Image 1 (cartoon, rainbow, N blue to C red):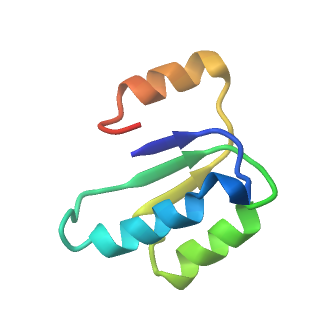
Image 2 (cartoon, rainbow, N blue to C red):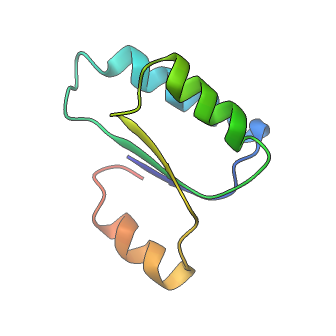
Length: 78
């Protein structure tokens, strides 16, 4: 799964990260890649660490718009 965009609390990325924690045993190959930056980044990184999802949830730097289209095209779920 991929989320490209700003990382603000109102976007509910914390809910998506918690969903990964709930689903990881049923979908062991699942990964969630987050591309962006924003005020919620520190809290999201802490949540990933607290839920021990470092091998499932990856918070990455923003990618230029022309490149993110390719990244999204190669994802199973956007």
